[in-house]
Image 1 (tube, rainbow, N blue to C red):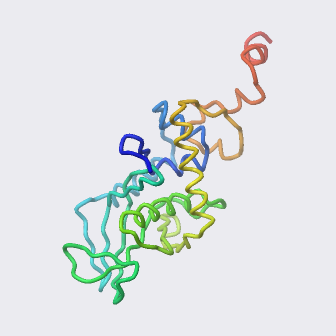
Image 2 (tube, helix red, strand yellow; image 1 turned 180 degrees about the vertical axis):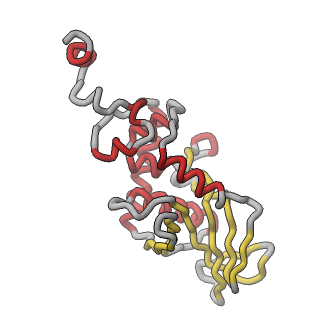
Image 3 (cartoon, rainbow, N blue to C red; image 1 turned 30 degrees about the horizontal axis):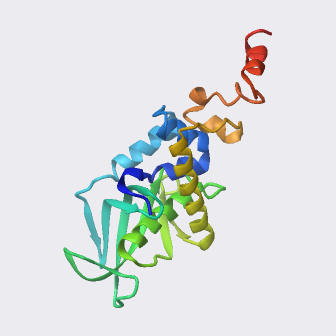
Length: 221
């Protein structure tokens, strides 16, 4: 169990799964830059992130920007939205001070694009779900994405495989953060979409294993 002083930002787990070097540049060196994709995401969340917003649709209630944390994972952050679904059972449900009855919570994450081919987004959703599970000592079987480009919801099962990936990522994040060592750049197709490409310079350090090699290839040739 991690202490309060050891907690890392929950939002970073998506960066880490996408690229450990990107995560380290942002969360260790405090580097950041925007591109079209990051700005589009900010615009979407500007309309979502209202901590005083409550929406009631039939029997369903939506809470926005809810603080969540897990001391087992050592992660803390804010969930875009949590939907409360009414339940007649006490199993895996919570109570809310403003709304009588039992409620099943479901994490909802807003993304500006469309579903990715890998599980980068799913890992973030699973991490948020695991935080909520720890806080209330319940089990939550699925979460929801709302993709701005598609304009519809996508349900995601929070599988054991996803949970194992979250635990491994969280452990690795704490290891790297404690050592404050930035992982080496590994150039790939995803680098071209990264807002930190110019800071990271993945093509410059490709195949450069020593300072002498770097200087010989880029300065003395």
